[in-house]
Each structure stands twice: as C-alpha cells, then as structure tokens.
Length: 466
Image (cartoon, rainbow, N blue to C red):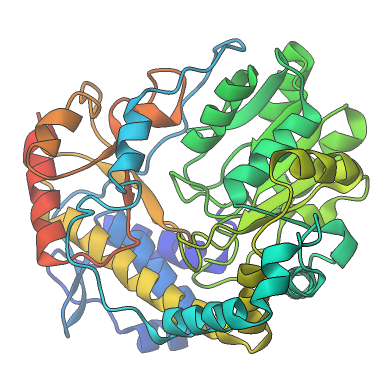
C-alpha cells in the first residue's frame, strides 16, 4: 500500500494506463484538472506525474503537457541483498582522482558555469564585511572552541523550525560535514570496531572508516526508503555493530528518504543495544516539497549524533559544518580542539549576519526550484537519449539520482575511455566495498542539463549500452 497520497495517485493512474484506459500518445489531463478531480494539492499531482515519468509511462512535452508513452515502464532500482561479514575498507584511488577534477557532482566540470545568483553575492558581501571588522583582534586571538555562540544560535533556531529542539550548548562548529563525521566516529569507536552503513553508501564515510581502521557491515537499502531497522538489528545481534551511519533525508547516491516509522524504529534500537546512530544531515535543507525533520528529534538518550554543513545547500567553498554530539558532546569538543583548535571568526560572523537577515531561507526557496527543474531535465534527457534498459530513482530532494544499468555493464571500466572524451563519471563501485553496484552510476542534477551535458549523456549511453 503506497505511503503518501501522491503515490496513491501515481498507482491509480498507473493501473488506468495498464488497463488501456489511456492509450499511447494520448494527452493526460492537466495538473489543475487532476488536482480538482482527486482533491489533491497541485504539488502532490506534480509528484505523481514525475513518478510516472520516471517509470517511462508518460512523457512531458514542452508547452503541451504530459502524454502516455508507447514504451514499457522503466523498473525502479532494486534493493540489493548484502550478505558480507564485517570487512576492512579499501576505497579505490579513483575517488581521489574524481575529487581532484572537481567532478563529484558534474559530468562536465569544465563546462561554463552559470552567473552567480544574488544570494551568493550577498553571502560574499557579508563575509567581506566581517573580514574588515576588528581585523587585529581576529588575527591575535582564537575564537570559542565550540564556535561563535551567535552562529550556533542561528543553527539551533533553524533546527527548531524543523521540529528538532536543540540548544546552543549542544552544537559545536566544525570545518565541514566530513570533519563532523570524522569526529563522531573517533568519539564512538576504537580500531577494529564494526560500523554499519547503508548500501550503497556515501564514499566519504567509507574513506573515514578506512582511515580509522574500522570494519564495515553494509546494510541493504531501498533506493526509495533507505535502510530497515530490522536489518540493522539483525546485524547488531550477529556482528556486534557499535555504530550505524545513516542519511535519513535524500541520501547520496540514491536520494532515498527514510519513512518516519523507520526513523523511530532506528532510534528505538539505541534503547535496547549499546548502539550510536550518526546522522548525516547534509542534504536536510534540500527537500523539494517537504521540510525534512531530522532523526535526532526522536533522540531522548543522547545516542544520536547529528552532523551537517552548508557545503551542499549554500557553497562548496564554505568549509563550515556542525555537530550535535549528544552524550558524547564533551568528548567530541575535546577532539575538535585537538584536531582543529578553532575556525575562522570572520567566516562565522559573516555567515551569522547572512542567516539572521533571512537570506539563507530565500536562497533555499530559489535553489529548490532550480534543482527540481534540473532533476526533471536530467530524467527527460535520459528518457530521450538512452537507447538501452535502465532504471533511475526520482529523488524528492538532494543533488543526485541513482542509475542502474543491466548486469554485465562495468561503469568503472568505462571511466578511462569516457575521460578521454572529457566526461567524468562517478561509478557505482565507489559506493560499496563489494561488487554489487559495478553496473550503477550516480548522476547529479546540481547543474542544469545544458547542450554540453546533454551531449555527454548521449556519449555516456553509447559507451555503456551493450
């Protein structure tokens, strides 16, 4: 039974298409008509139509609406069973090469970039102004090891607006979400401990596990709904898992969102086992239609460590994150002091004034609309330019989708030939310690599908289609 009303509408329309009530080439009713007919908000109708479009059942035509396709529906990526025992991590060197080419979220990182929007220019003005204020004092003294209290208050207020009541003293600033995850794992684990991760997993977490000498257990994750508490509990009983790293909202690489029921069940496991959950909330502000509420809001024992940053939602160049360490917050603050001492006072002051004046909220509203358009452009490009079989996720937030190709396709092998054509892909093998995702790709919609990127998708398809 579908969880949400847009899914129920998508299922109903799917049945009508399968029953022949809508024929190939026939125009679908307008969004307004469907909204009135089914008593749903227009946003819910749009989400239902996006779901059908991603499945290959309908297609959008410019200034004409949606039409039933003559193609068979595309399957969704499936949950992959993972049976491997805890193992050591060895992240391929390919990861470093992709990062060196600035290509983690772009097939064509050398393509022309868009002009900066007004909110980014405003951010730079706030940072520049803060740099000019009291430069001698800032150059002569370190800031608060936990970070500027005024900025931490802005973060606490933002989380309270997301139904997660945090206090200033519960938050420490870091040099980014990766740094926050690193501090969290250091505080929780000793070399040789076992950590559970979603599979496919964020390769940055795998890299940290390798550096810290930790073992990994990969939990099968739905490309739509993430991990299941039952699978984590089974792993805890079998392998004595000490920590689980999870991204409840718009996880990379799939864009999966954890249902509220599973969020509660995951947190409930911390009541029954000596388990710590590390929540990666880096995409939490990038929900297209709904405001994501952190897993941390259910934490009553201080066993959920919340990590986040502005690098995905505001600027990659803004290396500032945060961590809410729960019962381990004192230990984490001490580790931060040892590893980083303190951060830039000017950056913290500039960002504080930027947030306080409401610029970040306005920026997010504009960014979400751009990302929805980019996502739909990418799905449309795949639909019209990919001759072979594939399945793709349709994320409701974040920056990327997951492309699953037929078994036998090796995206890692295709990396070098595509690089010679100035196309940089992110192979599925980077997101696991197994070979379960060698036939998959992460594709980002952080950039619009320009003519250059459309051609790259076409070349990519010709290279990978058997």
